[in-house]
Structures are given as C-alpha cells and as structure tokens.
Image (cartoon, rainbow, N blue to C red):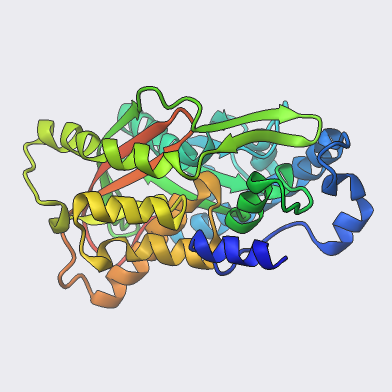
Amino acid sequence: MVSHALTGQKLGVQKRYLHHTEELLRAHPEFLDPESPSLDARLDIVATAVPELAAQASKKAIAEWGRPATDITHLVVTTNSGAHMPGVDFRLIPLLGLRPSVRRSMLYLNGCFAGSAALRLAKDLAENNRGARVLVVCAELTIMVFDGPKEDRFQTLVNQGLFGDGAGAVIVGADPASPLERPLFEMVSAAQTVVPNSDHAITMHLAEAGYGGNISTREVPVFIGNNIEKCLHDSFGPLGIAAKWNDLFWAVHPGSSAILDHIDTVLKLQPQKLAASRRVLREYGNMYGVTIIFVLDELRRRHKEQHGVGVPDWGVMMTFGPGLTVETMVLHAIQHEDILA
C-alpha cells in the first residue's frame, strides 16, 4: 500500500472519489483477482451507476443553464464504463425529463480524449441545427479497471494511483439568448490528430476481468511533447492568430503530472498556465474524458475570482488519448463571470 501512495504522489494525485467501496469489494472478491472472470458483474454495476452519476451532473448543468430540460434538442454522451444497448443516453431521457424526440449520440471507448470529442461533435450539431441546445455528458467509473494491488504489476499501481470516478455536463449552443444564456467560451475551431507510430502507447480492450490494456507512462509524455507545437500551429495558423503560448489561457487534460511537465518544458509556459489542470489532477485524479470538463469549470472559477482582469481573450483546450490521439480546440473568451457548465 505504500507503493500505491507513492505512485499517486508521483503521478500528481493526492485525492480521488470512487464509487466502489470496501463493502462492494467484499461482495465481489473476484474484482481483486485479474485471473477471475468478473466482466458481467462489473457491467451490471455500471449499467445503473453510470446513468445515475451522469444524471446528477446533468441536472446541475441544466439548473445553472436556467432553461427547462425539454429545451434540450440533442444529447451527446460519452463513457468508457460499459457497453450496453440501450445505453446511458437512452436511460438519461426519463432521468432528466428530456423529450422522447431528443437526438442522441453515444460515444464509447474514446479514452481520455472523449470529453473533447463530445464537445467537438456538440459544436457541429449546434452550428448546423438552428436553435439547437446540446447537452454533453461524460461519466466514468473505474470499477471497470479495478483489481487488487500487486507489486509485480506496475500497470495496476498506475491505475490505482491515477484514475478516479466522476461526471461532468456542459450545454452547448449557437447564438445565445441574452440575458438568460451567458456563455464563457466560444469554441472557434476543433481538430483531431493521430501521432505517428504511437498506437501501442495507450490501449484498452474488454477482457474477462474487466478492461485490459496498457499505458506507457514513459512514452506518452514524450509523444505529446514532441507533437504538441505542431498541433497548436495547425490549429492557430489558419485563424491568423499569432499569439505566443504564454498569451493564451490553457485547458489541458491532466493525464499525469509527467505529461503536464513535458508540456511546460516544450512550450516554456509560465507556472500558472497549467494551474487549473494540476489542481484538478491533484484533487480528483484522471477521470478519463470527464477531466477536461472539470478543468474548464476550474478555469471558470479562477476567471470569476479575477473578475476577468488579466485573463487572455484566446485560449486552447487539449486532450490526449488512445491512438495516440490529440484533440485541439481553439477557445475565445466571451465573458468571464459565467459558463454554461
């Protein structure tokens, strides 16, 4: 257990929130043994728990938005926790009181870039359907990858020290209706890039004992560090924005402290630029696609504390996941005192 604690500290994590409890693990001793079949039991748990967790985050977002749930026209849901038909999107309709005609898109197994992928899809839906209001929901439970700590299984130590449970929701639309709708960010452009020769760096697959796979904690930060500037130039160049990297605000998926450190080093960022990402990692761990929504919310909190003073107009959101895939989104700050999230 000491190794577990030290692993979490090395990864930049001090605290996480988990759905599974000691009582649940006592009821399912097979979860502690990677050689024991446990997939069905894990799937049974997430089939109920993930929609409930997603609904809690969604209700908070809708209440803050200030319009009725029936005004939601599109629903985009992403999770790595489960593989069900009908899925979380379907189950959210009665839990949230959405219209039966809400148009749904379900994204499974996109790993840590899932939140950005969902927002990218929501941007397209909002801009191409007049009056659309898209509810984006991400929810994750690490019970799908949990197993007992073993000193000779480094990946288990990484999983136990890094990943946490959580859910986040955002409402996306074009042409906000003032004064009720008060967006903080405009999603100006969105891009997705696959890093060459990196398909082995992050892998995930369904197995008898839940999810199997691998994360190369040594290679992933290097891959990201070697490719991040090209992704940024490819995104900002066509827009004619010649800002220096320290002139931007940053919403970066905190996969681990090593990833953030590599980005800091390559881009020569000032210490405060990735402060929101580091705080989310420290307080919640890596929650896969949910994490970037927490980072955006942390940026909102910080911008509000600053009353918009000294906050750059332009920013960037970046996430990283299997593939190795880099999602880059250029953001423009509309106003800093509120966010639709």
